[in-house]
Image (cartoon, rainbow, N blue to C red; front, side, top):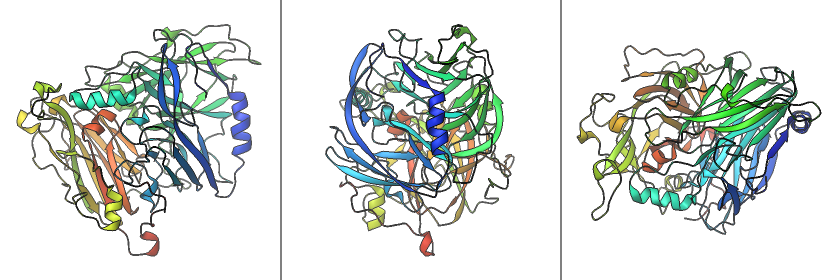
Length: 575
């Protein structure tokens, strides 16, 4: 999509899209190697009557959609023609034995510097459905992101009736300020970042914002047909509610896996998460309906309270709808409706049938208990900080606030046996135990340790990891994302995790790569450590990740030749 002014209207006809994508691409083929070129460059875009330069791929915002079949391999040639460092992450692609192209800055690679290039091999194996790609250095992913559609293999079908067409719906955020200035000011202040000026749907804010009456994404459908909407939350700071006025949606997948279908009037989607839904166009011809999204926030005082909109309209031979959309018909939960958020998320179940089996570890030999906390760190001498009581805001996992290296990435140091880059003693349990969700927690627990520690896992270990939210500084939801493997979400609840009285689903739990840990609650996941390499885990709220809510797993090599990490490519970006 080229740069556009506020008067531009994005219009996509799904009749044409269905012909292009589903008739030509879904005919199937053997596993293939496909090549793409990503030129990273700045481009001027106008939103909310304000123009600024943004980071883009090939000048497009949002970036292009990548189409593959299950089992394919992509070679993406990334050429950095921007004035800034960048890395690209393939969110939800497990990259078996090949962490070299995973993308997180200073974890698996040093950034691609201005004028540099890196050909990233993206290896698809069992993923099927909707994934996405995005920048993974500082806050460059604010505008550098796009969809990945993974179709079934040749001779295989969807586990639901074939839709007429499919389309990514990508949620994002827009700031009028330059994102690099925003990021620098955020770090220097020690407080919360500036709230975004708009939520976007496929790059457009919609007609509920000032000076944005024409900036709206529009979707044309035929009555009686079914469409597959591929929802992606690329927003930076908050979970979202989404709905389409007058329509129920049928959920059929999440994070590149299929789920048991269920109907819902609204969707809750975390940053980093993807959800596939079927839309049945069963309303009168020549009418329009609002699609709308708003932030969910259980605790944040400063949050964008606006609603972004797009239009769904029924047409015949592309005629203009005769019935205008009615915003009052939009039904979304309240901004702080925690029950609506967790009730939706709790409904996910894996298909767990013969064609889509599950392999849930029934017992764990490695048990981890990770607290997720907001913290307050001392303000540097002579500085003024905007955190609580003049401190700097921070975040931690097991009270360790991550400090990334700056001269060498963890993966290269691990592979070459270079010391001094990371430590290998990340705690398996909180260093201090207390009532984590108590409404009043002593201020002494607020200060975190800092460092870059990893947790080493034996190859083929059966891991149970319990995320425990804490009420330090009030607590908040944390959408946690694990690179390198999906995991089964086997349990969740509010309050402190009780290992004796827990209730787990070990039959058909959802298989995800991102899961929201509810405010002052817990989530239990299980996975097999069968992907050797270095894999990042972090909160997908960018302010939390920047404050230090992340850590790294190293999965050791196994004994067999196919159980070992592959060697690095020759063009790894220099440090």
